[in-house]
Image (cartoon, rainbow, N blue to C red; front, side, top):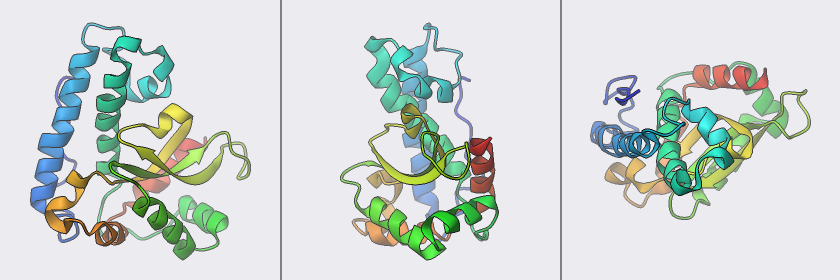
Length: 207
């Protein structure tokens, strides 16, 4: 894949919570740059035709000379591609993932509280994730849900965890609209979560 996939919806699809201008810059400039630098880094190497998820899952097999570039730009490309898919307005909180969240945290509100606290605790740039931790106990052999942060473009995949939901906390994700009001951006995120897609990722991760 030598060209970046377009955004899966209109730039205005998440208005008023994420504005058109931010989506244009975020996808067409930031994500494009991650994609281009990743493609250039792996060109001509054994990684060139490998799936990005497999690469991030096995960072120790990435040649040391390009490992940092792959972590940063390959991670940036994969994380953004994933992020776009979990965003949609007016999708109700439902499905198996909703049951699992309520089972683990006791209520949606308690889950949201912990997720928000993690997101507001990210220092500098990074991401907050809801993942299935395959090393965890409980909820059967498929692993249990966990909220975690990663700095910069480090990936949960590299830690053996499968993302089902994420929030981009780099300033470029929200600064045009929210400036330094990260709490407002985090609060509005709950209005644009594509729970149908999150549920699909959860079911896949539990297999």
